[in-house]
Every structure is written in structure tokens, then in C-alpha cells.
Length: 81
Length: 359
Image 1 (cartoon, chains in turn blue, purple):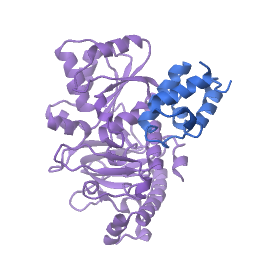
Image 2 (image 1 turned 30 degrees about the horizontal axis):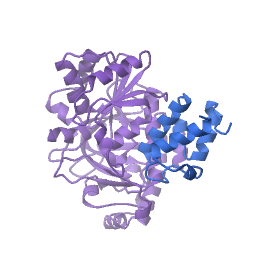
Image 3 (image 1 turned 30 degrees about the vertical axis):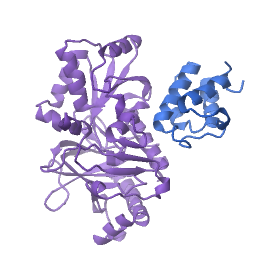
């Protein structure tokens, strides 16, 4: 799996959303991405990329797009590569 | 100062004088905000002739009895902005408080809790054992206070498990396995006081089960009343847990669903501390005048956090005593206090007390 596939899968597994809806998806946009869903998403991402995220980054992880930036800037995970 | 800016201040570093001016300014503007956005709150504050000009200190601000959130639905945002409702823990038959949250208030609650808790445990995330049952979080639109507590603290968990199943049975094998998998790492335990006592400690003791949690930290809160009835003092609670699983680091806290996020942690000297985000004022029950240090009274809590509902200044049904200001030996600034218990005739509340009353 490419990083992008792993990243998408983390969202799809957590929220049961369609891949085409991901690019514009933001925290609290859909019922499934609430604070409970957020913690499952974080767990999926940590497992997929074998990283441990900081509390600040978990709070800052506010959208599908911004999440990519956080992973690249702070965890050396380049989703687009 | 905006709430964002407040979040950059060390939670226990501000001396009371400095804190008071910050509180006064922010609470006064919150009072005006809620008057402009919540008709019921405006009527109540009009009825007591509230005038911003006559407020000279934090203690002059109006306060609502916490019980009012059971009797009326109070919100300062449009219905369409409410994205989560939290309810107080109440025994069945009791009316529960309803607290309406929009995205902003809900996010600030989480950020506030993070600031306060990381000042105790550091901001590193730890493998987490939640001493409760997963069924607590089943309804995601309507959280109980227990659910809100678990969720709020879960951000400190990196991989978490529930210690109890849906029928409140201790999952000992699962816990033992989890502890083994994480040997060498610090484990974070969270639970409500009475749950920890009855479903964790007592089961371990009775079945003579041993766990090594000497490298773990427990945070617990949510009602001592049930523990007082069973004559379990905070010191006995610590000693007992240490005996069955070697736990050394135990923090309790005082807090309530009506001001979620602003918890009051207990320091190593057994004192509860108010953070920069909130404060306590102890009042005499007969005329609501402010008590002196060392004098028992009714606890009022003020918080700069609540924006989607008018809960920034509340008179609780708890009895407490202010122990001092700025001079706790632990080094934390601001007020420190002790909760004595529930006022006579007050309803049974507290996450684990209400559960206990039904089981």
C-alpha cells in the first residue's frame, strides 16, 4: 500500500466514508468524526505509520488535508510521496 | 484576553491578585454575552437587578444554582449550533442537567483539560486502562458525565483498553496481558473513584489477583460520598491500591459536568487547586456572603470557559473550605481548598456516587 492508500484507509475504517468525500472532510463535518471517532482515527493512523503523535497534533488534526501537513512536518510521513 | 491566549498561560503559575483581574474582566464579558444570547439568563439577571457597573470583584458577579440546568434548558447559541449535549450523572428518577455544547466550547473544554492534566503527568501519551465499561460511550450525541470524563482523558491514552466488560466484570486476563505488553512503559489509569474501588480494587483483593502497576499513574474523580459512607478516606484509598497493585502515583480531582474541562486536581499535600481557567468562592449558606479562609461554606465555581451555555458562574450543592491562597507548599499559585461533602438535602450526584446508589 502507498502512504496515500494507508492514510485513506485510516479514515474509511474509522468513519465508513467514501474515498471521494475525503479531500474536503473536516473534523465534526460528519457525525462519525466526533471526539470519539477522532480517537479511533488517530489510533488507525498511528498503527498504519507506526508513529506516536503528540497531544498537540491530535488536537490540531482538524481536517483530512491538514492531517497530511502534520504528518509531513512532524512525523516524516509524506502522504503524497 | 481571548480564551486562546489564556491557554498559553501555565495553569497554576498565576498569583491570585493577577488572576482576579483576569477573571473579573473575562467573567463580566461572559455575563454580558450570555445576557445578550440567552433570554432566560437575561431575565434571571434582570430579576436580581444585575448592573455591570456595580461589579467590583469576581464575588459580585451573579451566580446560578447548578440545579437550574435540570429545570430549564439553557443555551446561548442557536439550536443549529449545538453539536453535543452532556448530561449530569443522576440516579434514575432524578432529573439530569443538560449542558449544550457548540464546537468552540467543546474544543476549549478539551484544550483546558489537556493543559491541566499535562501539568500533572506531562504531555506524553501513555498506554491507558480505563476503569469502566465501554457501554458508557454508546450514545455519541448524548454523553453522560461519565462518558465525557472518559473521553476527555482518552487523549492521553496511546492504545487504550477498558478494564470492565458491559456487565462491569473485571477483565483481569486482558489487563494482565496489556500490562505485560507494555512493560517498561508508564501506564495511565483513569476511572471514577467508586468504580475504581468497587470493580477494580475490591475484585483484585477478594480474588487475590496481583498486578504490577508500580510504574503507573491513576487519575480519578467523581464523588467521594460513597467512599465516605464506606469509611474509606483518601489515604486509605491510596494505601489499599498500593497494596494490591503497587500503584504509587494517584491523583484525584474535583470537577463537574456543568464546567467540564476545568478540573481541580489534588496536589501531593491533599489540597485541591484552582487553575487559571476557573476559581472557587466559598459562601455562607445563610446570606451568601463570602467565607474567610478556614470557614466552611457552599462552593461557588466560576469558569471562563462556558460560552455556549450560561454556566460560567454556578453555586454548587457541595460544601467546602478555602484553605489558603498562593501559599500551598506544593508551589501552585492561586486558591487551594477542600471539599467536605454534599450539603444536607442535596441530591446525590457525582459519576460514581449515582451509579453506586443504583447498584
